[in-house]
Length: 195
Image (cartoon, rainbow, N blue to C red; front, side):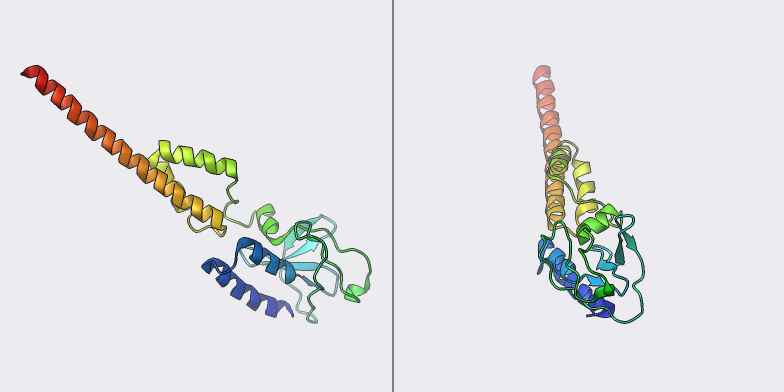
């Protein structure tokens, strides 16, 4: 596969991920498997959210957004034996004419978040609980949070967004119910005091 093949495959995988046919973990595994090493020995990967190309710069130890080289089409490396969390792909024989271990680089989802290319980071469990409580106390905030997180790539964020909306609407309904109940009780107390 070359860069154009990976671009096409990424578009297919992104559609599958957006439709729910692929989980976030499966999507990340596919991105990991599609890493390419160019003729200079640099590892290239697609960003999870934006689909932009990045290469791993060994000097800075960071992913750099760039346009892939248009030279001879590179090949995909053999599947790495290391766990995906460390993302240390094995070099293929004859790649860039050098031997040795490949750089330890972050996984594609870490690439986009670490470099700030995603719109917002995924919600942590503590942040979700805080937003659940605030959505129930301040109903309008729950509705706002729904619109912020409803289209995020992570399925967990989308399900949390639905709960933010539910809690926000429930809070507003309870607030209205309490207000109506108070007005009815207050009115009946005043009327019974007059008679």
